[in-house]
Each structure stands twice: as C-alpha cells, then as structure tokens.
Length: 265
Ligand SMILES: O=P(O)(O)OC[C@@H](O)[C@@H](O)c1c[nH]c2ccccc12
Image (cartoon, rainbow, N blue to C red; front, top):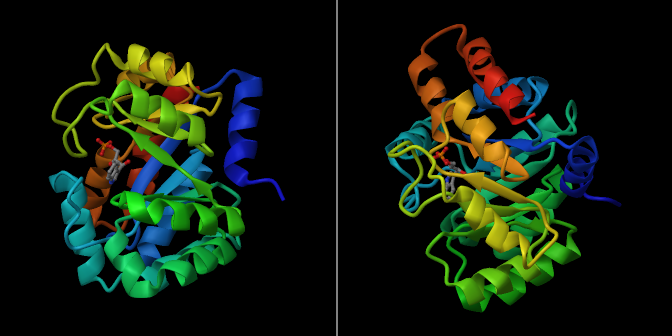
C-alpha cells in the first residue's frame, strides 16, 4: 500500500507546487473541537497535518505551543485519546497525518503498541522528537513494520556530515528547521533558508519542508519558493488560543489558514 505522505508529495511535485504542512496540538482546546479544527484545516487544503501529542515538558517548544499542550492536557487529552482522534479523522478525510511526539508519553503507552496503534488508526508518519540514538534502530524497525514514514528533523546547527547522513536515511519528507531555538515567532525566516534546503537536497531526493517562525502568507510564499513545503505551527495554534472561548473557533482558524495555504501554491 502506498503511503499518503509519498502520494501527496509526488502529486505536488507533478503540479509544481509546495506543500502546506499545518501543525496543531491534539486536544487543544479540547478533543472534540480539536478534531473539528483538524478537519477544517484539511478542508481548507492543507497537504499534511502535523498532530502534536501534548506533553507537560515540551522542551523544543516556545510559549505558544507550551500553552496549547497545557490546555489540551487540562481538557483531558492523552495519547490513547489522540490515537482515537486520528481514527475518527480517518472516517472522513485522507489528508496525511504525521504524529509529532516527545518520547515520554510513548514509553508510558508502550513503544511497540504505539507504532502498531498509530498505524492502525491511520497515522502516516512519526516524528519522535527526543529519540535517543540507541533507540533509533528499534524505532526504524517498528516504523517500517507498520509502514509509517520516519520524518527526520534537521537543524541549521546539525554538522554537514550528519546532515548528509540524516538526509540519506530520510523518509516521507525532511523537516528542516529555519533556525535554531524553540518553536514560535521570535524572528522572520532568514534568507539563508534557500542555502539550507539546497545543501540537504544534495544528499537526497526526499522532499524538504521548512518550519520555525513562519507566520504570514508572504513568509509562506518566500519559503515555498525555495523548498518543497512550508510548516506553520505557532501562528495557527495562537488562533486556537485567541478564539478558544468563541463559538466561531473552528471557522476563525479555517479563515486564518486559508490564505497561508494559498500562499504555498
Ligand atoms: O511554531 P512554528 O515556529 O511555526 O514552527 C512549527 C512548529 O510549531 C511545529 O512543527 C512543532 C511543534 N512542536 C515542535 C517541536 C520541535 C520541532 C517542531 C515542532
């Protein structure tokens, strides 16, 4: 069976378009509305959904994503419920899902069971954010056994040799960070992004998406012009935060992402 991530990127490539990858925290502001938000973002035309598993100590996340994880945890989100949310999403949508997670909730759930259940529910890829090197082989075994793509994160501070090694082993797409630091909008994307992408592309044919600090349609268009896809997280999550008490939450998030998605095309 072909993987939804590969199919999506092949199609975009044939059309000469870049992907729009939307990050949201699963269960924010609560599980039912989070599912509706993900469906609305998919309906707006997002190519890939990055679904974050909320965790109490999200060390790579800036304040916007930290607060989202807090809201989700307070509203009762757990990894089993996030997996259930994916299963429900799959009854209506085919948009690829990458499950983004810190390892702690995965260990608590069971490493092997996590891969099996995530795949069975309809996840297409996994990004395990803090996977230590000695667990990588086991993770790779499990992802290939369950036909999940292992998404690779490459930072600008990753040494060139290691970049090439990671790129050569990558699956689905590579997530290139536009800068070091944590998620969120501290600074506009730098002009060096084109060079970062070009360097990675020397080592692989796997599509390269760029994220961190991309917030506006202009920034999306700029990054899309030098990459295969653009990831936006905090800007969308911030809309969830600002409208969490509104009856129009889902519509507001959809209206916010629509021009961002169009800018990637
Ligand atoms: O929030 P930003 O700056 O738009 O960047 C995307 C980011 O939020 C999302 O991809 C993400 C959420 N948590 C992460 C942890 C590490 C790397 C990336 C992420």
